[in-house]
Amino acid sequence: MRKISKLMVCVLIITSLAFFTGCSSDTSVDNNSDVAIDEVNKEEVPVIQAITTEELQEKLEDNDWIVVDTRINDAYIGWELEGAVRGGHIKGAVDFSANWLRMEVEDRDNLLQDVLKTKGITSDKNVVLYDANGEDVSIVAEYLVQQGIENIYRYDVKEWAMDEELPMESYPNHHLVVPASWISELIENGNNGKPYKIFEVSWGDVSEDYLNGHIPGAVHINTDDVEEGPIWNRLSDSELEEFAKNYGITVDATVVLYGSDSTPAFRVATILKYMGVEDVRVLNGGFVAWENGGYETETEEREKQPVEAFGATVPVNKNYIVDLPQAKEILADQESSKLVDIRSWEEYIGTTSGYSYIEGKGRPAGAVWGHDLNNYRNIDNTMKNAAEIKSMWNEWGISSDQRLSFFCGTGWRAAEVLVYAEVMGLENISLFDGGWNEWQDDASNPIELGESN
Image (tube, helix red, strand yellow):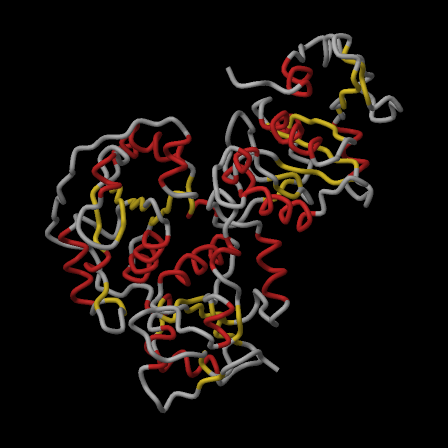
């Protein structure tokens, strides 16, 4: 059996009558006693005290306090989950999901240390942790204590959510990225009789990942069916319409996309939105979010079910994806527009092209760096905090009220950022489909190398 820390023991035996048995503490935030004595080992064990809604309200504007949402990312961005009657987070709260502590990723410890610094979760702060399931706070609290953070309080966000007068924040279009539980319900209720499709997206024929287990009913999409080399732009509008009919996609269908790597799913999502599909969703965090949720999978290969008509003339949303002429127009209007590069810093300054099949190095003259895609993802590959995204943009003069067009090498990485920008509520946004590959393919297009002035 996995060893349980002393802090976890204290936390887990909370009852409705007392917060600890064998760990003595007043529930008031004014209690000076912030440690308890473990009678067995005679060691000091930090105590997580409770904080009331009224006390929490008073601390929101206090710089010595920080409020932390420990739930899954979906709840933070706006989904109503785990009994909370309102979605989103307490206004001003940062996020540090217990789910990040469950992930096995390379260099996780250092990554988490950077996250703590970025969010201002430090040992000199009073830290209020909240959840809705009674479990996430305990997991995060144990980790914070290990980092030397001891002034920790716990809160049940369901109480906050029940009072409509208390401010909560949600991303305007959080519905575009969905939790695994939403997909499970979609399958269970059959989308209430409305047409829907679930697709696993990756490059090439049916992948080993798909055959080893996929969301029940999911059909594989090969990205070659929506784009072609050597530039790897989207197919022609007429070809995209045929693609949709071949896969049984209609303009009024709910289309859910996911993959072991979410990037190709976002690539197809942007193309479907350009075409005019009215309800396109991507699984937040990719297939691992489905697996970690404990939902069933199947190994049966599902076949496409073609339809006779897409239901609209492609493209319905023509400006959602732009091409080379429009990209040049954006570059010519630096005051109110930005062409935003979602490649690595090394690609941006021109030390590498980033691709074996792209020779040119550098960036379109006038393009600004929007940071690498990894900076838009949490440790569990869910969407990064919107405030942190905007902070990255501010460094490069990128603002949400500008006309923004995102690009990368061939449109995959930038597609994910485009959807996140839409989730955040930005409207005058697009994908520069050809990206660096198309730009460098014509020697007459001006390029820049090195760091920006």
